[in-house]
Each structure stands twice: as structure tokens, then as C-alpha cells.
Amino acid sequence: MSSTKEFTYAEVAEHSAKKDLYLVIHDKVYNTTAFVDEHPGGEEVLLDVGGQDATEAFEDVGHSDEAREILEGLLVGSLKRKEGDPKPKIATVPSSTTSSSNSTGLGIGLYAIILIGAGLAFGAYKYMQSQEGKA
Ligand code: HEM
Image (cartoon, rainbow, N blue to C red; front, side, top):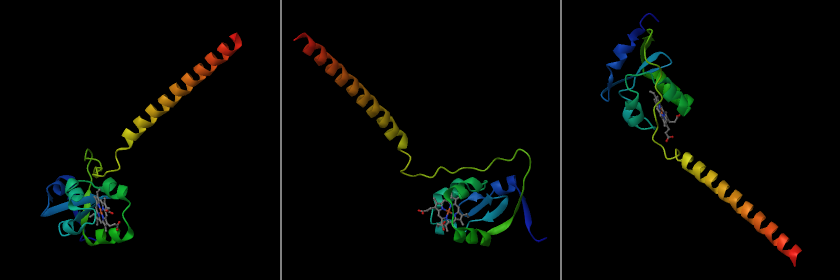
């Protein structure tokens, strides 16, 4: 495997355009230029991590074995990692499943209302009991 080219992080970073797009995954360098338009996850996420370490972004999605096979076909070399090189980038995938914080807020609000309601009901019950005793 002496033909494997070594890239520094700075060299990979030069390939961040759609027409010239390299990615680093597990310290291997992949030329994804031809694949950008075919990516089932869209070109946006690939461009987002273009010229950078996309290991975490790639693994977070839980790509299939087929995806890994495609990846092997795009291999152009390995990364010569230097101290101080940037860490893997987590691409923020635009998705509609990020509104959970809102419903959590509502959940706590609802819980408070139920607690206050129960407190009021208990108070009313006690009051009625005390009134009964007087009669
Ligand atoms: C060169 C690297 C990559 C290859 C070869 C690749 C390949 C694929 C393939 C074949 C799929 C279809 C599902 C599967 O087989 O797992 C897929 C889906 C997906 N990929 Fe990638 N991918 C790459 C990088 C990335 C990166 C860096 C991200 C960043 C977040 C990403 C995000 C996604 C998403 C969100 C889907 C799901 C699409 C859906 O099911 O609607 N991919 N990818």
C-alpha cells in the first residue's frame, strides 16, 4: 500500500467546494466530489463537512454497510494528523424532530396545573368537611 497518498489536514481543507470535495472519516481521506449529487442524505450535509473531519457526522447517522462500500470506492489516501488539528465535526442535520424542548416545557406546565388543581380540590374538600361539622 505504498501508493496510498498522505494528506495533511490543511491539504484536505483546500478541497471544500462542491466541485472539489474531500472528507476525512476515521483518518482516511475520501474524494466525494462525484458522489455529492447522489447522496441520499442530500448534498447540504456533505458540503457542510467538506474539507473537514466528518467522522462523527457520518457515524451519527448510522450509515449502512452499503454506504461504507461506497465510501471505500471514494478513498484517495490517509490523513497525516498533526497536533492541534480540528476535531471531528458534528453536522447539524436539519430535521423536524428537534422540537422536544417545547413539549417538555408544556409537560412541566401541565404537571403544575394538575398539582395546583389537586391542591384546590383538597382545600375545598377540607372546607366542606369543616362546614359539615358546624351544621
Ligand atoms: C462520503 C461519505 C458518505 C457516504 C458514502 C454516504 C452514503 C449514504 C447512503 C448510501 C445513504 C443511504 C442510507 C444508508 O445506506 O445508510 C445515506 C444516507 C444519509 N446520509 Fe450519508 N453518506 C456520507 C456522508 C454523510 C455525512 C457526512 C452526513 C452528515 C450528516 C450524512 C448524512 C446522511 C443522512 C442524514 C442520511 C439519511 C437520509 C434519509 O434516510 O433520508 N452522510 N448516506
